[in-house]
Length: 201
Image (cartoon, rainbow, N blue to C red; front, side):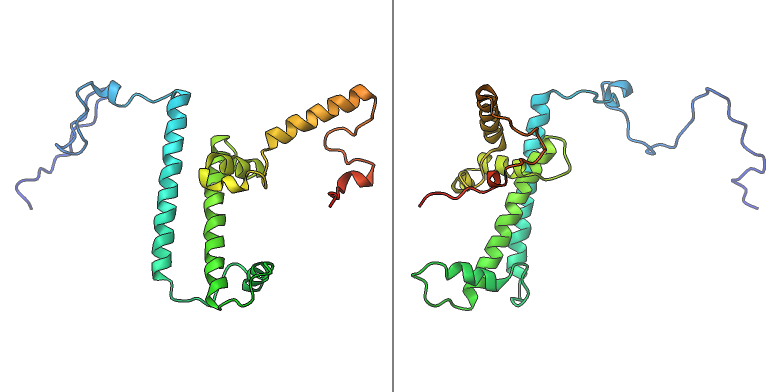
């Protein structure tokens, strides 16, 4: 039997009595006291929350590009692609000046298109999270395009929904003032030609 150990059981705990924990079991509370150290953060000002969200989105983009760079450096298999090379080649040949296309060119374009789509998706997703949504919508992509200077060439291709909504509301108000009946929101128009617009050439 070990002489350092006693055969008597420890005393029963007393309700409300302090418990003696071994030294170093828990970190000491900060100088402000335990209540100040562990006080819950109930409210963050909107500006601070927006700045924090923007910083997190920027950090995610930096991590995304670092991962893309590592992936490019490690790529050895150029046979498997996420985008169809035949379609990319067909788009490239749409230009009348292009006669011949090297085999590597569609592969490079496929990778570039994939990275373009991924970055635009990341930026759109950040906008969706700002609006507390878990579904990526066209408006998120439009907002990502509007916020990013590099994507300015897409502003006319993907217009903002709020501009469309304002135009639609103005057109509906004008039509109502003129006595033209319009279908309610979400109800398809009865005029089949309303869906087709052929620009004059």
